Amino acid sequence: MTAQLTVVRAGALTTVQDAGRHGHAHLGVPRSGALDEPAMRLANRLLGNDRDAAVLETTLTGCALRPDGAVTVVAGGAPCAVTVDGRPAPWGVPVRVPAGAVLNVGTAAAGVRSYVAVAGGVTVEPVLGSRSTDLLSGLGPEPLRDGAVVPVGTPASPVAVPVAAPWPAPPAELVLPVRLGPRADWFSPGALRVLTSATYRVSPHSNRIGLRTEGPALERVSEGELPSEGMVLGAVQVPPDGRPVIFLHDHPTTGGYPVVAVVAPGALAAAAQAVAGTPVRFTLG
Amino acid sequence: MTWNPALTTRPVGRHALLVELPDAGRTAAFHAEVLRRRAAGALPPVEEVVPGARTVLLDGVRDPEALARVLGGWEVPPAAADHGDVVEIPVRYDGPDLADVAALWGVATEEVAALHAARAYRVAFCGFAPGFGYLTGLPEELHVPRRATPRTRVPAGAVALAGPYSAVYPRATPGGWQLIGTMPDPGPLWDPGRERAALLAPGTRVRFVVADTARGVAAA
Image 1 (cartoon, rainbow over the protein chains, first blue to last red):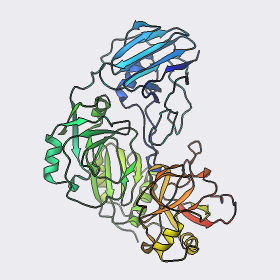
Image 2 (cartoon, one colour; image 1 turned 180 degrees about the horizontal axis):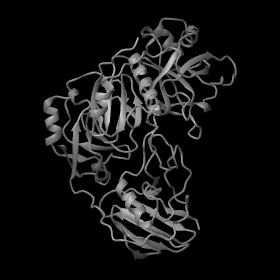
Image 3 (tube, chains in turn brown, red; image 1 turned 30 degrees about the horizontal axis):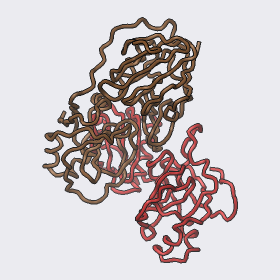
Image 4 (cartoon, each protein chain N blue to C red; image 1 turned 90 degrees about the vertical axis):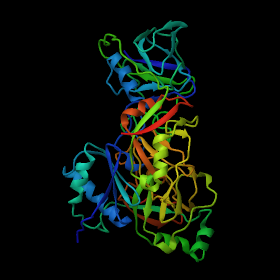
């Protein structure tokens, strides 16, 4: 049986996310998708969902939902207090929410993004093969607002038996392994030493498009404009102010600022959970 | 005549390769060759092929180094001028920057339409917004700078110029390009529910047609 979730409290930013919109970058379509992809997959696995079933991604302040039929959910990702009709419920494992009860996913105690997966998955209409909200170009469903209704699919039968699963802790320090290039030659050797030795901090202006950093500016040796070229997930782009921006899932698909290095894909989930002020170190590797 | 591109390739992280080409024409030819070989199953799996102004990004590649070696052996035919779909875009030349562009071109305002519509264009690459194509084809003497102050809102269907490029805005966004006209019905530019979501995808040839009245969009 399918159900619907009514959004009682949308929180700061809650969006629908799945594994993203692939294969359309040449048309200017960002990949989008869950920023902490391992967290999305683990939550789905605990429910017997397809690994890439759509989930809700919250930002810092969680959200509250009321199903019109009983549902099983997992709230994972950034750790937070979970309640059902005000009674404490566990985080990170399946929770049964009766029809009409309010599931509250609280403010993140650490980290940024919590994931609310529901057995059967969120089944908003896909756009270009994905249900993800893309904040850069406005594809997919709008960010959720109070009162919005979210459809849920048919759960796997039976819902998988809960297993204890380790959820990685949000980073106290963000270590980002990078490979230099493709435009490292636009920067001085000194700038490359700064990149790999200085401590940056996560800027509060970060979002789903990019993790912005605060720290020493990287000096360019090559002046002028870079003709627009394709951009990858994890690209460390350096705008004119010299502060590295790490491209996350809603990044533009082409751009005109030089990319000094690229972050290893395995480090991006931690980047998505790094709160403003977290120290950032770039390491070669 | 084919050319060995003597490619410059730059690794981009662990799973992508940026291929640099000497000019826009050879970028278009190389991009077309990548697509041909991929369609023929003669290319290792690549998730995204993203052309830029002078580059083609191959992203989602298992072994970028091995792919770079393969590309080094390619012979690439030049881009045929008549290759690719042709799309006609009707334009009312009524943009707010028409007089400024005329002044930059050193012509009367009335001549902008004829000069712009006389050229053959091709979508070099997309970006900025879904379905926003960067069209090459204007000769260098008609290149114009961006506006000093970007507009906070450029309407969908605005026909615009900046640097070597022409474009048609698929939806309303901020923008700093010079607006010379309007596509009367911009609806066909971008439709994610359609098999071909972007009317102006990379490689598409474009002709601008002067529309005096409410003409519909010519069939692609």
